View 1: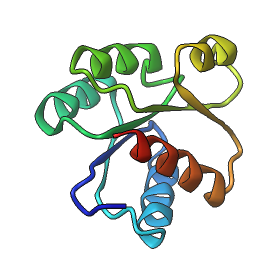
View 2: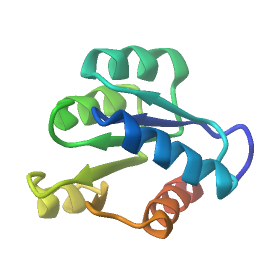
View 3: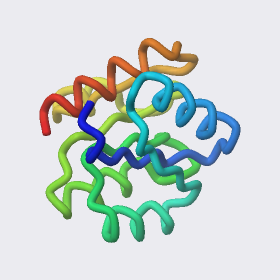
View 4: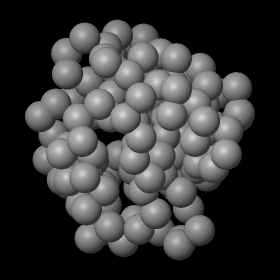
Length: 118
């Protein structure tokens, strides 16, 4: 992955966020930023204009994060689904969905697929 690509990870679960950031860094995806709230996600989307947005569905308003990203023409989005996201609807709209629990290989592959679209 080119070094200038930015990934924004929106998760309410700090340990998971740190683990995903570490997994991505070890896979050569070094520039993942983590935020834990919807408000912080909107601010970072506006300031960073990330190439890829990864968001939890629950506890951080995943639908709102998607809307904020799309408002900035960011279409490379991954939803982390704990079972409550409308999976088929998301997939039909072109959003990649990774189900919990996921493996490091699954999140790496999902991010790489999205980066290839940039």
